[in-house]
Length: 313
Image (cartoon, rainbow, N blue to C red; front, side, top):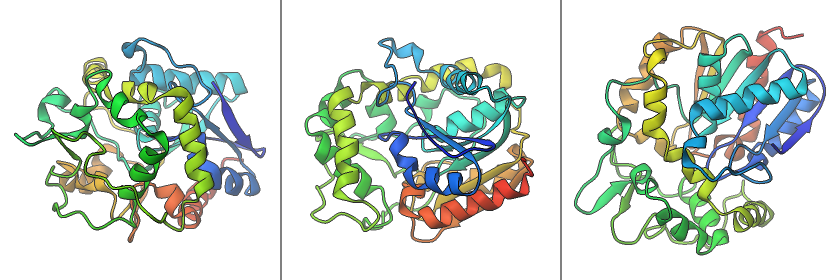
């Protein structure tokens, strides 16, 4: 496992999402270190300079939470605060769920804790004659890889722009389940033009870093996380109904497409029931999906306020 780290003090582990790397936490690494924390951002399993197992079933949430626990062991840390964004958020939430003895507190960005449902997840994902939910599109090995790897630089520019708060507003109402649909003809990137100008929060150097990583590694490792959605549901059956009990913070962008996914309009108001120690939920006006990159100042302030109240020292 490859790590980026900064500072000394109580440990804060930062788990990235798709299609990203440790680099998505570049602003938080500095801010946390300056505030007296030991900030560690790994390339997670399948990404960057960390190992990329070949077998799809080696990317379950049990593996990913195990990686976090192994990281704490390697650093000699009995406990840590775990923060996660996008796919890193389920890793952080489930680390807190499965190993509350090792997780002092949890911070979720974009993706809230979603309790295990009664139905296999992929059977609930929307699809029509013309379009399919992107997570279903990602299921068949090789299909999304061919789409995303054709031009990694253009892929990164498109995905980071179109899911940001700078892109045009989606037309689907919140919670409708229509957001995130992929046309059956054209693929994931088919309807996303390459932006001529990058948003102010994203530089050409940022794009080049991400594109260089995925040009070298491909996208298969990250896509394999999606291919375990149903397997995760099966493996987590023993924890059905169990709540996340450690102190928690949730931060999301008002214009994050994730908030438009099916059921989010009911889940977000119910978070205190499944996260009884949820200290605060923050929705950032005008912010899109890339929370800590689009609004680093506000995210850093929220994280540091939450951490200071924990009295970790």
